[in-house]
Image 1 (cartoon, one colour):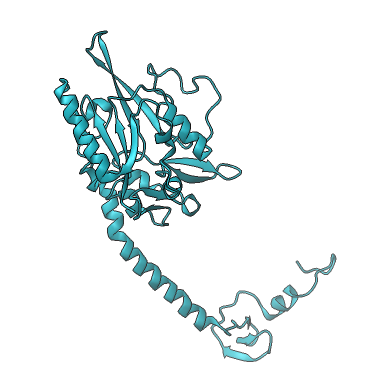
Image 2: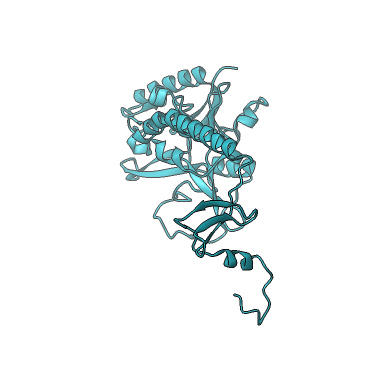
Length: 313
């Protein structure tokens, strides 16, 4: 199977939110029922950002100009599925991994340990976390999976299938790139000089390709994205951590082996004779220099059942 890609053409987008709804329906993601729980944001964008229950949002950026004095620069905010995915490289548990067959960054949430390294490494600030467990004490990664489960069954991602104006397309990555290049040339021929293809080379090549009618920043995309230095640091530390962990395991194993069959003697010092004796056998271990604060008598009585009035505590 050739590597796949989603193509988002902002010049066709009407901001209908259909893709967001399809994403939630297919992935069984809840939506808040309250009215404007985060307050009014002054935009049609809803919710304001990605969160633990929302993997995809459409963004609405207003630009001055056009026949009515304002132009909409619609954007698509979700995982870009980088070829050089720092989130997958930094993930210590394998919860995020590159699906070599499709090129998408797949998610196996059951493996997530909640370290949030991926959130730190991502240049697009995409991974979010969902509180889990009876008390919400566990955080599990939440992000677009690329609908790898659908792709393997010969279907397009859920968001693509619902897009009425045709702003979203899906197919082989090279084919989507070719379509995007042609569309950029059409837009430039119509006077949109800032029109650009985004995702061909960024982060080794994205698997969500963008045609941005008004330029990169106008549509809320990241110019020249770079992996966080944190990703490189953790990459260096992983082998060292593995060596350290291996050494620790060997050390614990050795200690366990040495300790098998070993039973510490219980000793008591007799101040009258100056002898240190084994409480169980009565054998004199050494004479003088007593280290035990309890006498033989005290050791004996501490193991006897105590009754009221015995005079022993």
